[in-house]
Amino acid sequence: MAKKQFKAETKRLMELVINSIYTHKEIFLREIISNASDAIDKMNHRMVADPSMDISREDFRIDVSVDKEARTITVSDNGTGMTAKEMEKNLGMIAYSDSFEFKEKLEEGADSDVIGQFGVGFYSAFMVADKVTVVSRAYGEDEASVWESKGIDGYTIKKGEKDTFGTDVIMHIKEDTEEENYDEFLDRMRLRELIVTYSDYIRWPIHMDVEAGEWEETGETDEDGEPKRDYVMKTENKVINSMVPLWQKSKSEVSDDECKEFYKRQFYDYEDPVSVIRVNAEGRISYKAMLFVPKRAPHDFYTRDFQPGLQLYSSGVLIMDRCADILPYHFRFVRGVVDSPDFSLNVSREVLQNDSVLKAVGANLSKKVKAELERLMKDEPDVYKEFYDSFGQQLKYGMVDNFGSDKDTLKDLVMFESSKGGMVSFADYVKNMQESQEKIYYVVSSTASKAKSLPQMEPVLDKGYEVLLMTDDVDPFLVSILNEYDKKPFCNVSTEDLGLESEEERKEAEEKDEEHKDTLEFVKATLGDDVAEVRISRKLRNHAVLLTTTGSITFEMEKYFREMPGGRGGEMKASRVLELNADHSAFRALEDAIGSDKDKAADMVRIMYGQASIMAGIPLDDPVAHSDLVLSMF
Image 1: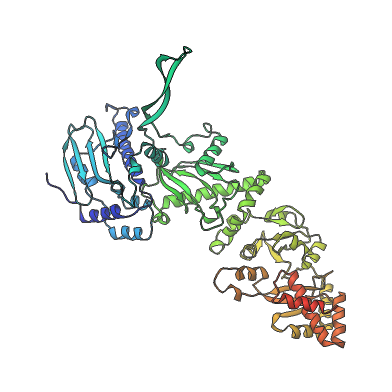
Image 2: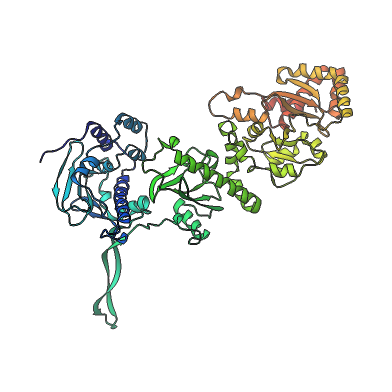
C-alpha cells in the first residue's frame, strides 16, 4: 500500500503545528470533539430532510475513551462518516495555503486559537500524538476506510471494517520528554476536566467511562450480625457534558440567583455581581449572552496584568476564553459569555478586528451594558454607588481614551463628590443649578477635604453654588474633553474667571490693580521667572495669597506629567500666577516694608509665595530654606 504525500502547503503547515511549542496543547481535544459534533450536525440535518432514515436524534452521541497501556485516546461519533474520497479531500490537504503568514503569527506569540484560524484544527492532534488513525464509514456505505499518518511523512488510506456508520479518531499519545508531559492526557480525570472546560456545552452527549466508589454488602455479617460492606470502585459510562448552557435557557427556567451562582463559579468571585444582563437576540445575527457587572474590582484590575474579556462560544463550543475586544475598553470590567451559531470556530484575536459579526454583537452588547448602568444609577443608587466606588475611574479613563471618542456614551455615568455632600452626576448638578448660575463649577485637588478648604472656593460657596470636587488624576483631562454639559460651560474655580462679578465690582477691581501697580511690579521682580504674573485677587476673601495658573496646563496636569515613569514629564510645567488679597493685613504689611525696608519686603514676598505654593499642594524647591526664612521673621 503506497504512502501518499501531503500537498506542499499542507506539509509546511503541519510541520509548524507539530513542532511549535504551544502553551495550551490540550486544545487538541476540543478540536477533535468539535469535528465530531459537526459530523453529527450534518447527520441531523440529513435526518430532518429525510424522515425515512433509520436513526433518531436520541441516538446521536460522542464517545471518548482512553487506553493507558496502548497509549491511545479515541474520539468516536455516529455522524455522517467519510468515504475514502472524502478522507482524501478532508484529511489529505489544507485549503489555506499561506503557511508563511501562519508561521509569522506563531513567531509573534499568537495563542492556540490561531490553529482554528488557518483551518488546521484536526492536525492539532499531532501536538500530542505521534500517530493518528481515522476509521470512518459513511452513512449508507457498507465499507469503511482507514486513514493513518505519523505526521509530515505522509499518510495511507486503505479499506477497513466498522460495524456502524460514523468516525473513530484514534490518537497514539507521545512518550514523555524532559520538556513535555504527555502522560497527563492518558488520565481519565484530566480528559474529563478538559471536556468540561472546553466542550461542556456541545449539543450532543459526550460519553466517557467514569470511576466512582460506593459501598457494597459482601454477603457476610460481623459479630453483631450486621452486614459487612466494602468500598468498591466501579466504572460506569456516563454523559459528562451538560449540553444545555445556562445562558441558553429562558428567564423563566433560570432565576437571577442561579445566574449569580454560575457567575461566582465560572469567574472565581466570592461576591454576587451587582447586575445580570441576559440577551436573546434573533434576526440577521442570532446570539445569546449572559453578562455580569461585578461589585468589586479584582486586585489587579488597574494593572497591566489584568486580562479582560468575555467567553465566546459557537453553538456551545468554547472558542475563546477571553475575547478582550468584543466590548470597548471602558466596559472591560464586564464578565460573561456570548454564544452564537454565527460565530466561526476559526475566530481568533488575529481576525477579530475584521469580523463583522463580532463587531455587530459587540455594539449591541455595549448598548445593553450602558442601559443597565443607567437603570442602576436611577433605580438603585446605593447599588450603583457600590459599583462606582470600584469602577468609576475606569469609566473616566474610557471618556478620555482614544481622544474622547466615547465621551458622549459615558458622560451620564460618571459621578463626583459635591461641596454640598454626597455624589452627583453632571445631570444631577445641572438639575440643581440656581436660576442665576450659568456655569458648572469644579475644583481639582488630591482629596475632597483639601478641595473644600481651598481659598478660591470662597466666592463660589458664598453665592450658594455647588462645586464638583474632582480628585482623580484623569478628571482635568475629562473636563477639557467635554468642555460643556447640557450647554453649560465648565469653570475651574482655581484658574478661570468665575463670572460672579458685577460691572461695579469689576471696575473696582481694576482700580485696585492700578492703585497697587508698584507693589505688584515689586513682587514680580522679586520672584522673577517663578511666576508668569502677579495680580490683585478677585477671589480671595479671608486668605492673604493664592497661587493659580494661566494657560492650558494646570497644577494637576503638571503633577500628572511629573509622576509619569521615564519620559520627560517634569518639563511640563504650569505657568504660575500669584494672587494677593489687597484687603488683608499681610498685604498692607508688605506695602509698608516696601517703603521702609526692601530687603525685608523681598523676604516677605518669598514667604508669601511659599505659603501659596503649600496651599496649592505644590512641593517647595527648598523646604528647609523656606522654614528658615519664616523663622527669621520672629
